[in-house]
Structures are given as structure tokens and as C-alpha cells.
Image (cartoon, rainbow, N blue to C red; front, side, top):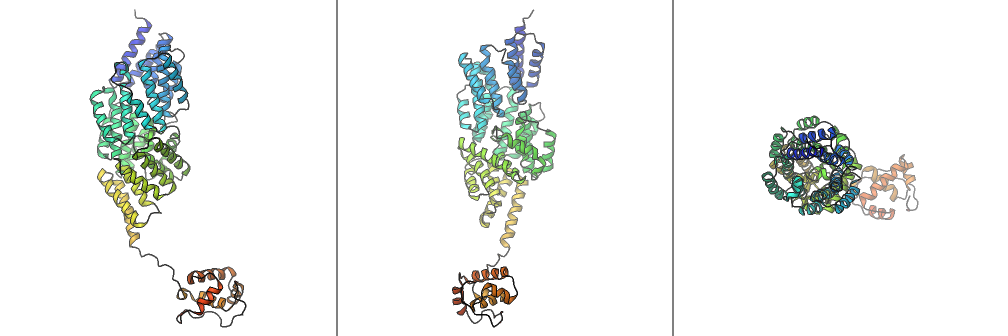
Length: 524
């Protein structure tokens, strides 16, 4: 007859094999059934709950956190470090306020009872905290210290490899990420395939390989997937549809994805909001866009992996008239750029700042930074926003609009290409329109009324006397006097008199009555 502890060990081993085989839902069902059977001791039950919570971490963080909290009281000293680090990792991914406290507790538990599994899980949690804050180099360095091939950390190998690839994507190292993806596909078990496919599609989207990204995402969506991976792949397809000029298709995909719920369970679906920001009618997704913007105050991870998501979200919020959230998102991108000082993030943060401040200098700096990256859609977006800036001179705007039109065409973003071409056409029309003639100067530029008023002023009339003489209001006379001074380039009655006496014979005829009261030539 099997002992209760044997049941727990077999369930944990079977669940791990199911996860490695790409059947996580079955693994969770098995663990949940064993927990419900309630035939194990407190320590074994804590292990089951911990593994079950870890299994929900990427898709249903609220459930994961609840199960991990339930596991704490019964956990033995050798398991406590792993449980706390796993809880900290889930909390960090969604920007939970308890994250730092959990990390400290996990560190103390690991120091008291060190195990390889707890050490790796704590490293993953610290890396997740760094990702959440936008400190990608810190996350990269933490992950580099882990050997995913070590037998003692077999269960965490997939997480380590996937997080390393995501760090490369967030740093703009798209070629390095491609190499790492190829190696991971060859080395990792089938259970890693969905997360690797999502990372691959995001890389293709960021570099502008839109048709390939869409094709891979479409094929992957036919399989059983976790919620976070499914949302990431749907977001890829949505982004491609918007950029290809098929907004109805993009909206249908978003509608089929369904509502994203409340925090923290909506964080795994945040990529849908990043893609929805590309809708030319952002009001259709007002609540989704606002939710994503609010959640970025907790964690910036949702905008790290697809370069263009951040500035597009800022633009969409501005179109919605939500300047407060737009400024907040731009501020978060600036924090990422400060913590991850690479050309990609300098460019993305500058682009967002240029949008909220309407600052062409920031947009120009963003374009310069993005030229040093392989993020072609992000560069084209920044160029088009530079062309649209009202403070940019026409020749610069025309050049800035022409380049993204060609760039969008090269990556298959035909809808964006048409938008850039339309803007370029508007600039062409503006360039062909005759420029308004500047106001004339000198006595010949005066109207008959202005010349008559000048005559009366030179003759000694005050403004009040001119108003009475010509049956005009004092305000109207004052406006005419200002126009006379501006057109003649004078500042005083004395300067007016000197110029008026020296005016050429073909100056405007006197439009005032010949007689005017004489008084001193002081200002009237």
C-alpha cells in the first residue's frame, strides 16, 4: 500500500514531465486533484500547492499568489526558500507591492536552508523585479550567472533560457536573440516551444518582418497554449493587421480575445493593449489602453519586448485627450532609458517625450538613436511623427515623411505606408500653395483710412480728436494708429511727422478733411 508521501512525489514528478512535454494544463489538473484528495502531510501539501501556484504564475497571477500563500504555513525549512522566491517572482511580473518584502524573506530563507532550486528561483525573482523596473542590464547579468544545464536546476532551465532571450530582445540585441532562439529550439523540451514561439514572433515584429511574424503566430495559435502566450501571439497578429491597413481584421481579433479583466490577472494580456494602440480610432479601445497605461506604473515589462509599443501607446492616449496618462507613460519610458542606456531605449523614450512635449528636437534625437538599431518599425514611426510635428519646417517635414513611406513598404506595413504617403501628399500641396505676401512697408502700404489718420496726427490731432472728427471709436482709431506705426516702422509721433513730411509724392492721397485742429505734437 502506497504511503501518502509517495502519492505526492509521484504527482510532482508526473506534473514535471507533463510540463516538459508541453501539457501544462494537464499538469495543473493532476496537481489540483492531488491537493483536493488531501491525503498527504502538511509539507507534501505545501509542495503540491507551490508547484500548482508556479504553474499558474504566467497566466493567472492572482490564483498563483493565493496558492503560494496557502502553501507557506505547512512548508518545511528546505522548501520555504523556493516557495517565497516563486511567490516573489510572480509578484514581480505583475508589479505587486509585496515584491520587495517577499524577495527579502526569500533571501533569508535560502540563507538558512540553501538549495540549488531555491537559489535559481531567487535569481529568477530578482531578474523579474529588474525587468519590472526597466533595469534590463541588471536582469541580464543576474541570469548570466545561472547555468541552466546544471542537473540540479533542470526544472528551471526553460525559465532561465526564455528570460535570457527576453533580455536580449529588450536590449535591442535582435541578432543575438535569433541565435539564442535557434539554440533553445534545439536543446529545450517541447514544453518550451510556446514561449519560444512568442519570443520569436515578437523579435520578428520588432525588426519589421511582419509577414513572417504573422504566419508563425497564426500557426502557433492552432495549438493548446497558456493565456499569456496566446495573448502575445494574438497581439502580433493584431499589430500586423493594423500596419497592413486591415483595421477591421485587427478589431475582430481583439474582440475574439475577450476582456482582459482586472489587475493583476490582466497583466499577462497587456500585449493586446500595446497592439490596440495602433488603431486609427483608439476610442474603440479606451478602457484597454487606459488599463495598460495604469499597469505600467507597476511594471514596464509589457512594453519591453516589442519596441514600438511604448510610443504608440503614448500617441493613442494623446489622441484620446488623456494627456495625464500619456505623460505618465512617457515618464516610465524615460525611467527605462535611464536604467537601460542603450540606443533603442534612448530612441523610444525620446520619441515619447517628443510626442507629449510637441518637441521636434526630441523627435530628431529619437530618430538619430533609432537609426543605430534594427527596430525598423519604431524608426519609421518616429520619422512620421517628426514629419507631422507642427514645429518642423516644410522641407524637413517632407524628407521625414518620404523616408518612412519607403521603410513601411519594405517591411510590408502597407497601411502605414499609405498613411505616410497621404501626409507627404499634404505637404506637397502646402509646398505648391503660394506663400502669403508679407505686409507692405512704407507710406505706400497704408490704406486710405490709415493715411488720413496719419495726416491728422501729423497735423497735431490727438487720438480722441481723430475719433471725433472721423466718427470712429477711440479703440478703432488706436488700432489704425498701431497699424500705421508698424507699416512705417516708427515708434513716436515725432518720428511719424519726420517720415510723413519726407514721403514721396505718389503716397496715398489725403483721405481726411483738410482742416484739423492744431495742438502740440505730443502723444494722443
